[in-house]
Every structure is written in C-alpha cells, then in structure tokens.
Amino acid sequence: MEAFETYQTPLSSRYASKEMSHLFSPAKRFSTWRQLWLNLAIAEKQLGLPISDEALEQMRANLDLTPEQFEIAAAEEKKRRHDVMAHVYTFGKVAPAAAGIIHLGATSCYVTDNADLIFLREGLTLLIRSLAVLISRLSAFAAQYRDLPTLGFTHFQPAQLTTVGKRATLWIQELLWDLRNLKRARDDIGFRGVKGTTGTQASFLTLFDGDHDKVEELDKLVTKLSGFEYAYPVTSQTYSRKIDADVLAPLASLGATAHKIATDIRLLANLKEIEEPFESTQIGSSAMAYKRNPMRSERVCSLARHLMVLHQNALMTSSVQWFERTLDDSANRRITLPEAFLTADIVLKTLQNVSEGLVVYPKVIARRISQELPFMATENLIMAIVKKGGDRQEAHEKIRVLSHEAGHQVKGLGLENDLLDRVRSAPYFEPIIADLDALLDPASFIGRAPEQVDGFLKNWVEPALADKELQDSVAASQRVELSV
Image (cartoon, rainbow, N blue to C red; front, side, top):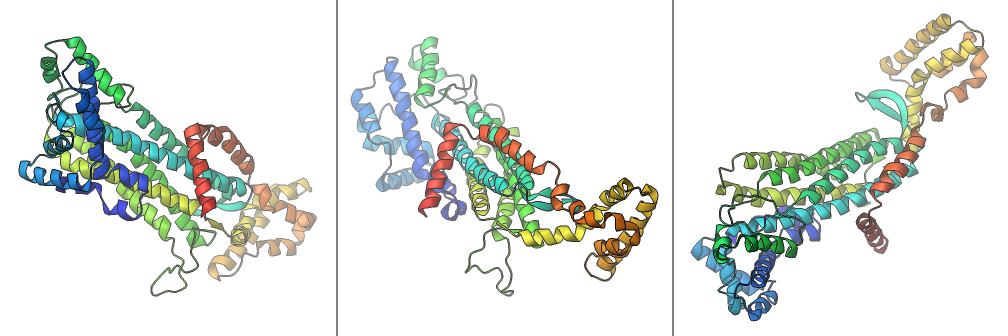
C-alpha cells in the first residue's frame, strides 16, 4: 500500500472538498479497479468466453474493499512487489468463483490507466461545478457594484475611473475561459480500453482464437460499460502521457487566473478599498494586533503557483516515455495528478469563500477618487472654459500652473489635493464655478462601465451557466449557504 499513500496528501486532509479527496483515495482507486475487472469479465462472457454467472455475481457483490481486504492486499504487495497482482489476489479471495478469470488477457495498465482516465474526467467535472459557483458569486458582486466609481490603475499608477463591478468582470471573463477550457478537456478524454501488453491486443486475439471482430467488439463493449463514448484508437502499454499534459494545461491556466484575482484583492486590501472576509476573532499578526492580513488570498496565490508548475511536470513525463512505455512515469504521476486536482479544488473553494464575503469601503474609494480626479478633470475644465468663450491655449496654461502648485502640496508637503480650491479662487475660472460639481461628478468619468457589466452578465455569463449541470451546482451551493 505504500505506493498509494501519495493519494492521501496533506492538501486533502484539511482543505480539499470531500468529493475530491475521495476521488483520489485508495478506496476509490481500488474499487474502480474492481469495477474495471467486472466490466472486462462481463464483456468477455458476452463474447463467448466460459465465465460463470456466479463469478460475475461474486465480483459485483465485492466492489468495495473492507479494511481487512486492504490489509491482505498490503501484505501481498509487500511479498510480490506488484500492486495490481496483489489486488487481483485479494479480489479473488472474496470472489473465489472468479479467481481464475479476473484480469483475463489484460495487462496492469488496463486497470491503472483506465482508472486514471476515469479520475481525470470525474475530477474535471468536480472542478467545473466549483468554478460555476465561483463565477456565480462574483457575478452577483459585479452586479451589486456595477456603477460604483473607483480609481482605475495602469502600471499601478492612477488612471481613468472604472467601477468596482466592471473590474470584477475582468476576473469573471478569465474564469469563463477557464470554464470553457476545463469542459473541452473533460469532453475530449477517451478510454484506453483493452489493448494488451504493448497495445497490439495480442493476448485478446489469442483468447478469441484469432477472431479480430470479437477483439474489436470487446474493446467497444468495455469502453461503453465504463461510461466512455470512445476509446483511443491506438495506444502503447499506456495511454499517451500527453493526455495528462493536456488535462493539466487548463488547470495551470486556471491557476494563473486565480493568482491574478487574488493579487488584485491583496493590492486593494493594502489600499483599504476592498478586503476579503475577516473573522471577528481572527488574528492577523502575532506581534501587530491591528493587522488584517489577506491570508486567504495569499493562500490562493501560494497554491496557484504550485498548480501552474505541475503542468511542466506532466510535459516532462510525456516527453520521456520511451517506445511503448517506461516506468519512470508511475511514481511521478501518482503525486502530480492528485496534487493538481486537489490544489485546483482548494484554490476554487478558497476563492469562493473570499468572493462570498468581500467587503467594499465606498468612502475610502471616494476619498481616493477625490485626491486624483481633479487632475484627471483638467481637460474637462479646459473644454468648459472654451464653451464659455475662453481661449484653449490660455486655459491650458492656467490649469497647468495650478496643477503643478497642487501637485507640490500633495507630493512635496504631504497635504491634500487643493486644485479645486485654487480653481475656485482664480478669477479666470469664474465663468465655470457653478458647473464644477457637475464637471467633477465621478459618475461622468466611468464611461459605459455599468452598461458593460449588464451586457456582459446577460450575454456571456448567463449563457455560460445555463447548462443544467452548472445550474444545479449553483443552486446546491446556495442551499448549503442558507442552511449554515
């Protein structure tokens, strides 16, 4: 059993969902092996091999392992140094009528690789459902703050205004792309099927006395019994490890999205504009009692980096599969694949938690706008003077001088931006004094941001979440939230 302990990683024990932890548990893995052996036996019997109904019934009745069976398998593996044969032996002990036909004609990768493909597909399904919930939560946040003006940043320097909701749509759009990528990866996964030791199906051709049609039918039957639409047309002893790389690529991309979102939240927390949830009894620092560290967002960034790196591991493993196979992939994959899915699961669950409790501070946001908006509004002031009969070049020079004086107050003296007071005091700008409040209304600087939020949610988010599977996931998560 030592070889499979990696499926019980520290990640799963504390943070991952029960569903994802179970998917990569020894119990799930070995029960899946037994189901695959049963599927093979059913198909072989259907095609004429002498397999008794009693054998199938005993197999069907013992798909789940008891603690005693785990102990038997562990002892047998220690003796034989072969995990699959240890479990063939253990299965045969509880299904004696089938002991002679379990694994008939198959190689170890019939169960190991086909099981992995099942886990990859089910794991992607779990992530897709979690991602839908996160998108739903952030969409509600975007709608709520669709028209709340906030200072935009380019190069992390003050830029034109946007809205809190519009900024959230940038996060959601990337998550929608991740949703698309995960669904594509899941829907593309095939089955290894029954291909034999080096993928030639030689053992099965012998079983069926050279009948090629029966061998092909066997592959199709087992594939269908295992819940797949198709099997890969050709394989070596294993399915191509490129499949692992293709599956981990969208997970890595999801990691990049999560890192960007969590980083934005961390920066906003520093600005005191938006904070992640902070419990009333939570401690931010052992020394600095006032601290409200964005620990959940930091955790997301930490794990997201790990998730992005794991894809490189899958690429390297794929690149060194010599000829029909080499075993140096095995121990690596038993760590890499579960870790990728468990990590992605934790990242999504943590981001969901953050999204459900984001705290917005409108007064802080408004204060920062008031510090920067006068500078941004200078062009509006110039145009207003021109409309009142003023000269554009003269107005520009007047504003330039006053802006530099106000800038010195802010940067040189650490005082508030007093540009508007200077404008009000300057006789030159008297014709537009009554219009200043309207000219400096933040809502007039956000362009179509609120309308963009509305259109994006209606035309992109709603259709993306319209799938019944995703709607059920969102509804289920809402019921859980209400019950807590």
